[in-house]
Image (cartoon, rainbow, N blue to C red):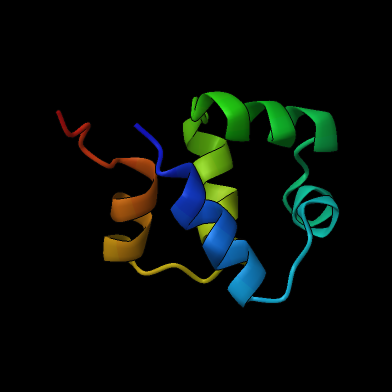
Length: 70
């Protein structure tokens, strides 16, 4: 399960907009917005986002593979 708030925070901290991220990763802006609503990213999208945002493995795992808490 994707931690959407952590992803948004990371994008903001890097000084990027959703439109910029979409353009640089090759993900359609509308698709990126939809993915951020559902948290359902493809592996290729996770890879592109991780590379653009310069995420470490731990950061990537924390954002995109967060365990659901009850």
